[in-house]
Length: 224
Image (cartoon, rainbow, N blue to C red; front, side, top):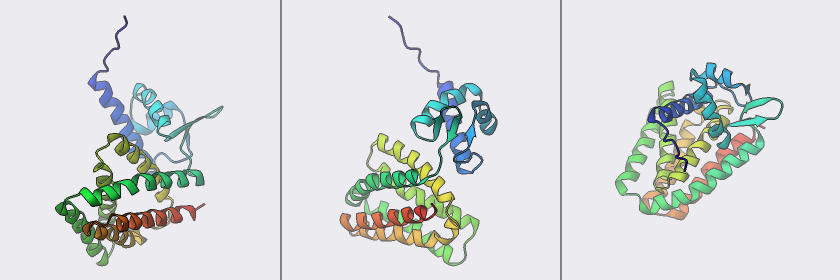
């Protein structure tokens, strides 16, 4: 009877490091959507060993971050109208359930902490936007959505949400002046959701969340 060789922890760490570097490079536009690459080019772009890149590719294909194109090779996911529609539809499906659940189960202190973080960004932004404030707003934005999703206590959903977040972030990077022009509007959209959460009004919270996501979807579709 054959035995499955346990994967050394060092190999697992190497794979995870390769994945983290790849996604960081993607989000920094060092690796661009639609770009064709070879395995060796990925080694150069990420600084990771060839073995780790070879093991990384099936994961990236499964997550839709890389597509194998016959006769041409590996292509970083292209940004098109289908991706935009699919990514935002997936957000809607997951966040409707998560927002409703969080509104009913989160502690008052957890909601108050989230609200305070958003109000701090609005206050800072009203005095003038800087790169620091924009960066803080992006972090507050991401943490809000991930906190709500993670509260479902379902690692499959949490993992899938984070992969989809990468795709949504790539779409956002193509939106002109998104970070500067939309910091306060996005924070206020979040605060409308949070206000409904404080009232424990799940229906209103979900409605505000849907409006928030659909606004982002509409901006992305106007780029096509």
